[in-house]
Image (tube, rainbow, N blue to C red; front, side, top):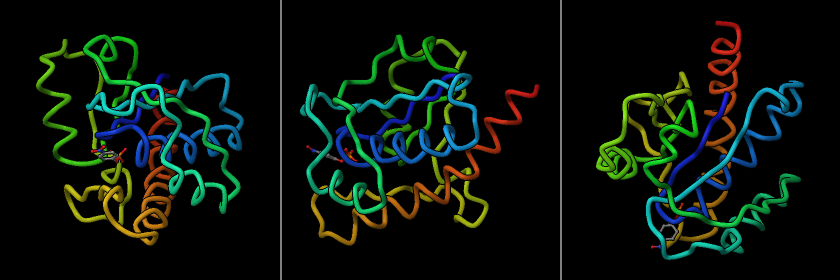
Length: 156
Ligand code: 4NP
């Protein structure tokens, strides 16, 4: 099973989700059965490590983020089984690529049973420190649900 997280810049939200989910998958003993990556719909930060504020927040929870930003492409629809976006703009931009209907596309917080319908992971880039902590909180909650979803797809 191959999962890719997608946001706008690929330096804040999706590398965070990637790191959080990779740890959960590893702890569940499923690392050899689940491939995890992230990408951005935009190309401004390609090749860069995650934003220093994102990396600092992750590090406070024991997560080292080493991903280098890359842009999401049409080919990712066939390279991944599940495309997990952060907000409605990501969803629109991904769908605009007019991809073949193979991969499943979902908003991350749709995997959190407590989250409102269509709730986004808000972009923390232009805000303060608290926004980066919130991204981690939201990713941790939603990734727990995502793990159950992935387990059931692995069983199917
Ligand atoms: P991300 O945050 O989509 O969570 O990585 C952003 C990072 C950079 C920009 C926008 C959002 N930017 O406009 O450069």
